[in-house]
Image: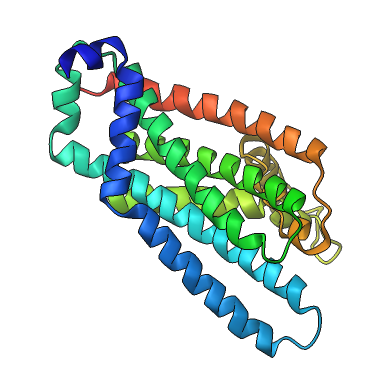
Length: 261
């Protein structure tokens, strides 16, 4: 084991992370919730008067997206906290392994689990949506989950507490999802925009929108309902995801290296 960890630490740590996810029956939990959401969508479809398929597609897309983000962030944070409490991190870093290799191995393993979650959610949507639109939606969801995974690792290394880290991740996600709507409300005709306080608020919201990822453009339910997903939009999402993941990894590595473990 020691020779394997020394030769390819990133791959080995990623493999052990995947194994942990399987031992914790994460896949069965995801499948169980997907089945429950499917049953709920079928029940709601009986209530819908018109556009039943469109309504089901929108409901499934929004519900599965929110469920995936919560489950992935919760699993990443609880898994890392358990490893910190069990001194697993101290044991791994006692070997001649750079902290960057440990972090990248964890990120890679969690990323595979996130991609698997996005795949399982996408398979259900094939019942209602054309495959091309499902593929675009699924890739976008995988990118969204990758950003959430990297941010969850950053929050865990920063706060080292499940409740606080998960709260910050959820606040980050909700704000990134709604920041454009908040800006529209702040600049609406019903709000007096000439006052000093309103200008300060608008400037603050603009600053937040500048640094936050544009998650409102990710995994859009409109793609599932009206089949408007375009590969060009997906390329922009992938590029933005790569930039934010690199920035979050840099911040997390800085925090990890400065910690005394």
